[in-house]
Amino acid sequence: MPQLSTTLLRLLAILLVALPPSRSAAGHHPANNGAPRGDGDGKPLSPPCAPADRAALLGFKAGVAADTTGILATWTGPDCCGAWEGVTCDVATGRVIALQLEAPPPKHRHYMQGTLSSSLAGLEFMETLVIRDMGRISGAIPAALSRLTRLRELYLEGNMLAGAIPGSLGKLSSLQYLSLAGNRLDDHLPPELGAVSGLEQINVAKNRLTGVVPPSYKNLSMLAYLDLSNNLLSGAVPGFIGQFKSLALLDLSNNSFSGEIPASLCTLHSLTDLSLSHNKLGGQIPPQMGGLRSLNSLAIDGNMFVGSIPASLLGLQKLWYMNLSGNGLSGPLPTGVSNALPSLVSMDLSHNHLTGEIDQFFRSLSAAGHDVNLSSNKMSSQQIVLPQKLEHLDLSKNQITGVLPEFTRGAGLKWLDISSNAIGGQIPSSISKLSSLERLDMSRNRVRGAIPASMAEMVSLQWLDLSNNVLIGRIPDNFTRLTSVRHASFRGNKLCGRIPQAKPFNLFRAAAYAHNLCLCGKPLPPCRKI
Ligand SMILES: *[C@@H]1O[C@H](CO)[C@@H](O)[C@H](O)[C@H]1NC(C)=O
Ligand SMILES: *[C@@H]1O[C@H](CO)[C@@H](O)[C@H](O)[C@H]1NC(C)=O
Ligand SMILES: *[C@@H]1O[C@H](CO)[C@@H](O)[C@H](O)[C@H]1NC(C)=O
Ligand SMILES: *[C@@H]1O[C@H](CO)[C@@H](O)[C@H](O)[C@H]1NC(C)=O
Ligand SMILES: *[C@@H]1O[C@H](CO)[C@@H](O)[C@H](O)[C@H]1NC(C)=O
Image (cartoon, rainbow, N blue to C red; front, side, top):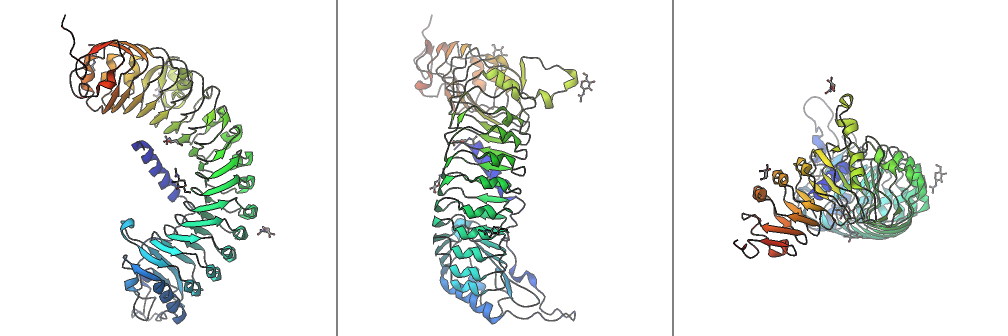
């Protein structure tokens, strides 16, 4: 995976984690938060932990055969409200209200191995239960947890829990935050959970859940965060999700959902992140999607969407990530919207059947409307100023025509892939204005003419692929300035003359220069002396 995408994914992950309702109770609370135990101020001594709670905790401890985190080693002595790590008691009553166990970093090195004892169900005053990233806690989620009627937060993520999600969790009427992500849970989503109408967050990502989203979930109208990604779920994307007016994140990616995107989803004005990637969804992208005015990130790659990209998508003012790659989208690249996508960082439209002219498309992305002094009205019809934050643009594997426009300024563009299209014309010498570019791929097009010597100014380039075009003339000698290039290909053109005889150009494999008119010099045979 290219480094940039990884960065983006990480950013995305940060956004997800930072989402308002994920008041993830985890954290490394010191045991008991230092509840006063009679500090001489005349305050009453808080009571020691209730024997029933202590017994329930010891029941849990007994179910854990191995603990490399060191947490359970602190669970000794009579007072579980004292120094027992991860245990928090109500100061007034001495009842356990939170159990928060999380593997210390580096997470993959520490684990608890064992099962979840149903004795946890004895902690009847518990509001928060977090057992996170323990890696080797296996077995089933005890159905008896349904007795924890005060529970508001239940996080059992990053373990090895298996079996079905117990339907009895539907009795946790106070539950607001539920995460069972990253386990080995299978079977269907329990319909009973639809009764927990105060749920604000459901995360069951990265399990092996099958079946459909139960119709009873239409009652979960408080949901702000719904992550069902990386399972084996199928059926339609339920239209009732459009009624969840607080929904900020909807991630259904990497499942087998089919059918179309319900138009009702397009009325979710709080939605910031929508991912439907890698499903079997089809039909057209609803034009009303332009109404998702809070959207930061839209990923519908790896589906079977057809038809054209609605121009309304270009109106999304906050969108920074758009991935429509790997569908059956056709028709021209969207154009004709002024101030298009002003927040755009990354756009991937690759692997579709899109047509249209690349210069027109760049023109509509051009920052003229927001970045350039409008009153000076100097927006020459030729010059392109890309959006300030744009870093990644992938239009590869389509049927795009037109010619590359003249660039005025490339801002932060690092990755430009227009390979495998039908782009003609010449490489404009102003391409050198894209001075942050690290990866430029224009292979498999119909670009003709000479390679502009100005490209030698693009010193950030690490990847340069000009192969399979109709370029003529020499590879400019001053390309020897491009010392960061790690991959280059000039293959399959009509180039001639001496390959720049310096690192790295004389070190690439001969294949990088093959099938040209008369290139010579290392790594090819020496040039003939005249
Ligand atoms: C959904 O909510 C309505 C009204 O709040 C309630 O009458 C109904 O029983 C609920 N349905 C389910 C499946 O919980
Ligand atoms: C999709 O989910 C399955 C598990 O359901 C997982 O094994 C696979 O790695 C996931 N694929 C991606 C691309 O995340
Ligand atoms: C878009 O999705 C495709 C596959 O679904 C993935 O390979 C690609 O890296 C994604 N693009 C970006 C910019 O994240
Ligand atoms: C915009 O251009 C006008 C005329 O050229 C000039 O007077 C004004 O100061 C400029 N504004 C900015 C913000 O640069
Ligand atoms: C490269 O060489 C050309 C022609 O010799 C020259 O016009 C251009 O300024 C040079 N560029 C750099 C970056 O040296």
